[in-house]
Image (cartoon, rainbow, N blue to C red; front, side, top):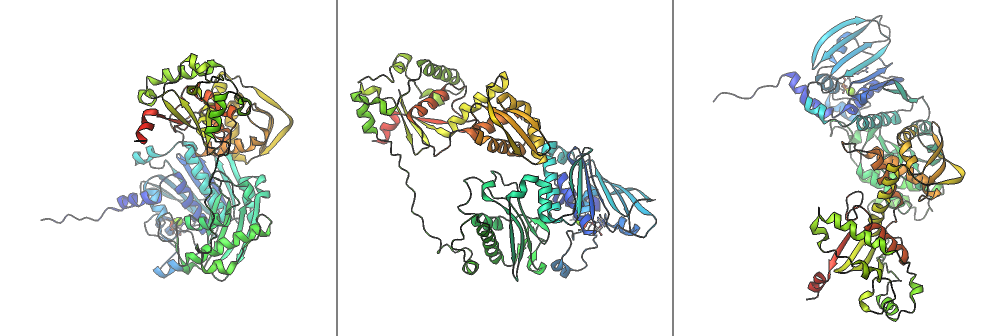
Length: 620
Ligand code: ADP
Ligand code: MG
């Protein structure tokens, strides 16, 4: 049989390699910025158009390339950074694989302009889909400029796979931040669609962080410093009270390279143990310096994961350094801060004090007592019933009926009592049948009786549904009621966050917010929606911003909807909150007055029912 194996032509091999190195515009940004840093640049400029889909350009004032090198730089495995395998363990550059430019040139239109110090003229090379189209001698300043246009022009599937500009730009900015945070001795600027987004002058690490994330960040930072033989740690962690709901501001750099490490992240999380509110994540900006011999960066083409020789020690050192800082700055009591012992056994669960299982008892839950009350009809006051107008229960019934067409199964079991009987539901009728009331279970569920059996409502989700529909209504009829604040509320945000708020301003106003002033890094609020306590305003807006940032906009993306969802999520009664009887009943009424009572705004079940038949079966 004939031989069938062939060597792939270079341009095909390059395209395949590009699949690993270049996933999206942000990957190109990373590679070009890293090349500029490796070239010893002191000023780096990033220019982006259409989130990098049309143009990504990086201009540096680094050492530039000779004519031959300029041409060679686009060859695969062509690098000036290592010469032998041993060099891999002495790396002090970002790049070393010699793949980036070759890969990028295989899938885009690339123009390189470069000149070395002392040379009179430089070189320009135009290369498209791995083919050199043009090479010229040009006059250009010292340094290098690489423009990458029409990314994935020859791989339509990849191009179509790219996300919206908002999402791709987010990735580009993330990458820019990572590189800029790792090199505060280099000045960076970024332009997006012609306007300046970031201007980061040379400064210390704290200044760099503040320049990127806004002035308000300054007061949040707690320094972390540690110098041992195996590891040097420097940087900052965010004070626990500023912990974010998203993992946004978490940065590890190892020898000035941004890396992702769930393991080291865990070390920090454990140093914050007990200091963070549930569901929040500490911010950190930490630089680890280790001997390059003790790490292997070569395990991932994008070089964001690295292997440490002695991860356990790093874990312990990092954890104790962070703990120590939090303690020193009076953020945490310096309890059991024992550096050495934790060093020996970083994962020492033996020493972890055991905590008794928490048993939550709802003290107010006493079915017998309540039954008795209703039966005798004497002490209804202490139960504090608030009689809801029967009309509410009626609307509950109507809502369900209209819904039941589409989802008959869900509701086949829910037979609410008819109007007459619901009207008597709260009457002090002596009949045992009429013990209609609600109970709260574990400060989480509201249990209520219905004709066919019982109803269990998730209070948090149910309230989200109620608020969500309220907000949506207000925003669409644009008739929200606002409460005037006595003193204007001044809130600080980063430039980027303000941009997001600006986009949502109009919708926010329809919910009842009144903005009196929107500045570069702060806003002034003079009115808030009736349902929003003043103290919650900043939390709600932060949550909103992070929801917008994380939302992957698709065809159905609507700012109004997102805003309503986000605010409902922030303001809804939380799990763990105990509710008065009248509050419970009010919530039940409101839920069933909703258009879609059966799911939360994020499509999670809000209630379940269990019929007497089903209960009976359990007692067989
Ligand atoms: P790597 O960075 O892994 O070496 P690249 O494909 O990114 O591989 O770059 C290939 C080579 O081109 C580099 O080793 C370097 O010598 C040269 N080069 C790339 N970008 C620049 C730049 N901005 N300034 C100077 N030289 C550069
Ligand atoms: Mg490189």
